[in-house]
Length: 621
Image 1 (cartoon, rainbow, N blue to C red):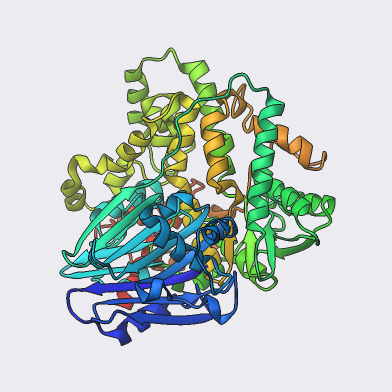
Image 2 (cartoon, rainbow, N blue to C red):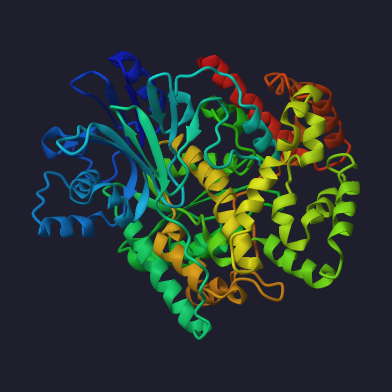
C-alpha cells in the first residue's frame, strides 16, 4: 500500500515541486520514497512506499521494465500475482524481484491494457509507456473493480496531474457547487465528483489512457457486475459450499504478506467470518483488534471477545472515550475531502492501535452488499407487503408534508423516505440533507443557481437503482455502486493509511462478488424479515454457536451524545470555515435542535467535516 503522484505537461516540469507533492503523501508510504522523470522532462512519476511484498530494495518504485520503455507507480496489492508470474514465466518472462509490481509490468508488456482484466486485487496505478513504432508515448492508469484504492486527477491547460489523495493535487481552492450539493445529500462525493473544481476521480473498475502527443484523455469501464441469473436449482447447502470455498480462498490469498498481519474484529458477522477463514488458513494464532466504548449501547467488544476466544486469537482491545471530540481534532489535519460517515473516527483509532502490532489487516467490508445485510432491505420488503396498495401520489404527498418539519423530528425521515415507494427508501431516505433541507441550508442565490439540478444526487441513485432484475438485486447493486466505494471504502482507506496500515477486504474478491450478484437467489439474501440468510447459514458452520447472528452494528460512535457534550459556543466555532453559501442561521438552528433532543448529530457532523476540509484546502494552497 502506498501513495502515488504523477505530473505530465507540454513543457519540462519542476522536479522539486513533484517531490514536494509526493511527500504530502508520506503517511501512506513511510518506508521509502522515489521519483522518475522522462528524458524530455515532460513526465514525472513519484512514489511513497509502504513495504508489504518483497520489502527489499528490489521492490523500489518507480519501477522500470522492458528496457526502460515502461515505468510504473503502483498503490495496492495484486493477490494472484504468483499465479500470473508463473503464467508469464512459462512464456519466457524473466523476473528480478519477488514483487507484484514487477508482475504488472510484465503483464502489460505481454497483454497490453487488457492485463487489468486478469488481476485479482485492489489497485490504483499509473504506467508510462514511451511508445514505439506503432504508438506514441502515453500514460495508462487503472483502478480496481470495487474501488478500494483511490485515484484523483486533473487535466487542464496542458497539464495532467494525478495522486492518491486530493491534498497532493495543485489547483485553486475553489469549491465545486455541484460537489457540495451531492455531499450534503449523500454524505460522500459519488463517482468522479471531487470537492474542488477541475479535479475528478477515476471511478472504480475504470481505466484511462493519456495520449502524450495529442494530450487527450480517454477513459473506459473494463468490468461490470454480472447480470442476475440465479442458480434456482441449487439448495442452500450447495450455495453455502460455493460461498465458503470462495471466501476461504479469498482470505488465503490476502494472508500473503512479508510483514505482520491481523484482522479487524468488530464482533459482527462479516469480520467474524473473516477471522474464521483466516484461522483455518494460518499456521499461527491470528491477531485480532477491536474498539470498546464502555457504557455505550454501541459497544460491541464483548461480542468480539466471544469470537476471539472461540478461535484462540491474539486479541487486542482499545477503549474509546465516548464523550470527547478529541479524536476529530487528531484526525482533522489529514482531511482533504469530507466524509460524513462518523464511523471514520473509530476506524481511525482502531487503525492506530492495529498499526502498533501489524502492518496489514483484513476487514469485513462488502459483506452487506453481497449478502443483503442492511436492515433497509428487510424494511423495504416489509413496507411493500404492508403498503404496496398505496398509490404513488399519496406517498409523494405524505413525503412532501414530512419534509416541512424541522430537521431531527422523530419520524420525519422515515416518512420522507417513502417518496418513491417502499423500494426506493435507499434513494430518498438520506440521514443528512434531503432536497428540502438543502434548500434551507444553502443560501437562496446558490440554491437558485442549482435549480432543478439540486435533485442530481437522488437522480444518480435512481439511475443505479434502475439496473437490476428485482427489488433486492436493485437495492444491493445501488449500494455496491455508491455508498460502498464512495463512503465505506474511502473511510477504510483514509483511516488506515493515516497510520501506514494496509487494509484488505476478502469479501471484495471479484470472484465472490460475481457469484453473489449472479448466482445467489434474492430469497437467500433477504426474506420474511430476515437478512443475510445464506451468510447466516454459512456462519452456523463456521462461527461459535453463542454468537448472536441477528445483530447489525460494526464500529460505531454515539455522535449525538458526543456533540451534545461539547460546549455550545465551542461547537458553533467549529463551523466557521464552512463555505459562504452555507446559511449560518440554519446551522445554529440545527445546533439548537440537537440540544432540544432532536437527532441532528449526523447532519452537524457532516457539516463539521466539510468545514475541516475547506479549512485544510485553503491552508494548503
